[in-house]
Image (cartoon, helix red, strand yellow):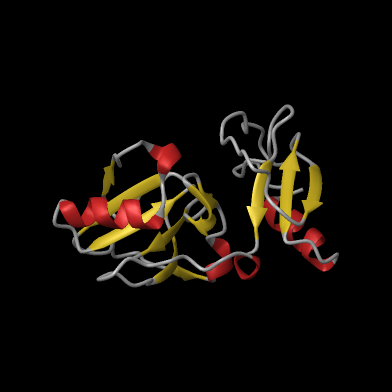
Length: 169
């Protein structure tokens, strides 16, 4: 089992939300729960050990980009797409703390924080991380927008990247 396999399985059955649990279980749904916690997902996927597939009584949740509201982009910023990122070679080098912490993360919060520090580039990753920089890393590799499908912790109708995936603004 992998996150992608679960997403494909659920999508083929008409569901817009997919979740993995206990390393190999796949669950499907139509909406995200009202409250969503990002802690407790610590089990590697049976089909891809570098990916997380939930935990004990915890789902890693995925949502297809086409099924949710598009990210609202603050004035002066525009979406540059979804990019592959790596812990060892970040596209944007500066991880910043946003007001309210990662649980409050939204596109507007990340872009405004980066802008307040004078950075022209902002990126969101893994639902609650905000990165800023003046230029992209040299190894920038664009990915399909659907790869950046983790709901933002502070606004579940927006997307804030994914595992090793960065929504760039």
